[in-house]
Image (cartoon, rainbow, N blue to C red; front, side, top):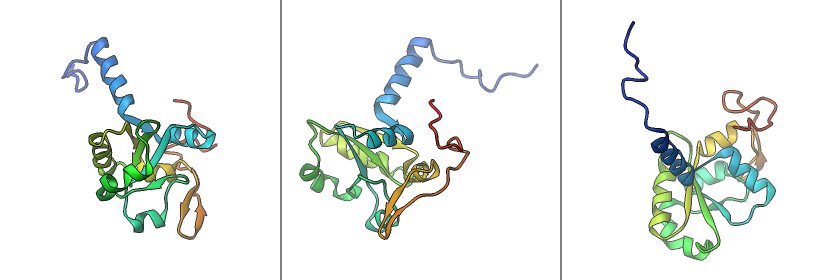
Length: 155
C-alpha cells in the first residue's frame, strides 16, 4: 500500500480546524452570499470594486462603489462610514490579488472588511446581472460554478 498524499501532513486537531475556518469566514465572503445581501437590501454592507475605470466600465456589480485600490485612502473617508458599514472588496477574480491588497488597505485605515472570493469573474459565472457603461448585462450560469437552475447551491 502506498503512503497517503493527503495524510502526509496530519490534519489539524478539531479545535485548530474550527479556529482556522471561523477565521476564514471572518475574512472572506462568497459571491452568492454577497448577491443575497445586495438583493435583500441588507444594511451595513458596502461592496467596493477596486479595479480601474476601464474595468469598471466593462462590467461591475450593481450597487458597488468604485474605488480603485490606489485611491482608497483618499476616497474611502468620503464614501464609507467605518462605524456602520463593513466593506466587501472585489477585483477581477481568483487569479488576481487586487481585492486582497484593497482589503489590507481598508483594514489599515480602520475599516471592518471582507474579501469577496471569486471576484467579478465568479459574479458573472454564477449568472448574476452586472452593469456596464452601456447598460445592464448577464450571462448564462456556468454549471461548473453554480447549479444550472440559478437556484443557490445552499452550501
